[in-house]
Image 1 (spheres, one colour):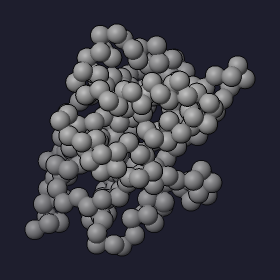
Image 2: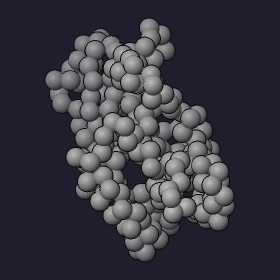
Image 3: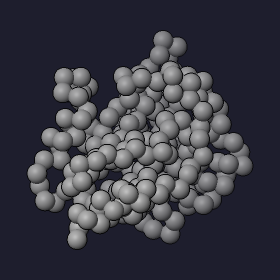
Length: 225
């Protein structure tokens, strides 16, 4: 990923309680479940760039987790800034928006949405004092069937791109399996994938099934005996 740097991302944190390796495996493979529709800020805490610069990510993660017994792990999420369409260029255009959320088939999206595992970099587990990197992390990916966040819609509306906002809202009415099939058959996202792949120097990678090494699973077992 030679052309994308730390400054190209917005950083977010999600803290939760993890008692088994299977939960980490599930999040790395399927994504982070939210109970708040398609809102990033309802389930992820943003890190201010000045704080990141002054304190560093590792210390921010430790401070955010604290000593509460309710939480023992923090997931780190990195979203390329351009995906949020927060900057208008000289020609009056904004960067194309990349969908980040998938609704679970057959469920109310208000209670069953998944944030893409492709932007989950890893997790720190306090109980065993160990971090795990998500092998599925890749800032350039195929978002077929996915939905944009509420925050992305707000950014587009701030540039008066109401026709695009309306179109993206209409996507939310279509079931995932139909939307996925239509996106793939039409190659809807290929120009956007190619655009960001060239911009960042990153080639999309297929999803793999992450399985935590047995020696790390043993750390969890010993901790929770």
